[in-house]
Image (cartoon, rainbow, N blue to C red; front, side):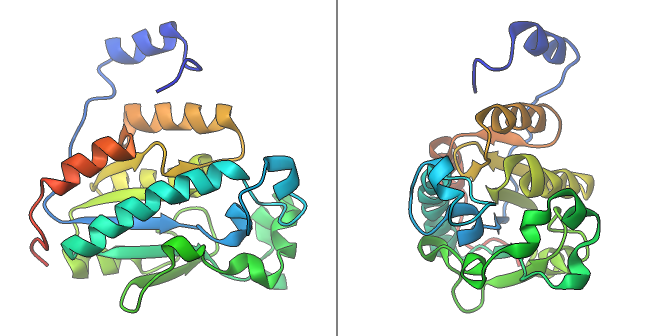
Length: 227
């Protein structure tokens, strides 16, 4: 993980029995959350420069994560497993609400910002889930699609680690899904916030590993699974 998490914190969680791995099911689903130009930018540039294009961009770390999401996506497609895209729909004036008041910049994203990053763009038949709140489950038919597809575990990728990824992982866990979060296939605008949220999710709600480790575990599962 990271040196950001101090030894005392690790010791306390370990002493309480947190952080035990739960593994994957036989038919995982892949969530690719908010991997749109509004969070990646149209070019891999440093954070401060990325803000000049989209105030919600996370800079170069987003592109690093996208490269790993692309690897996971290729495996899911090859295995015939469900791929779902919860994404931010273009904002209307009536969408402002509490989030718009908290972060006004989200209400002024240019249309280009809502396009999917081309390296992970959805194919026909992959499920699109427009959402207006952090969790991919809130106010969307995600759960219904997962039941229909026979999904028994979820790999959660995308943006942001502390927001929509975390909110979706917690809700998935609350619905009793096994959850995996690849640490280098999610991204945030702050390294500190990113790492603290990965640690906390790994202790309570999800198995947190690198993409390389997760790919090895996924590759060992049979193709398709029971729909």
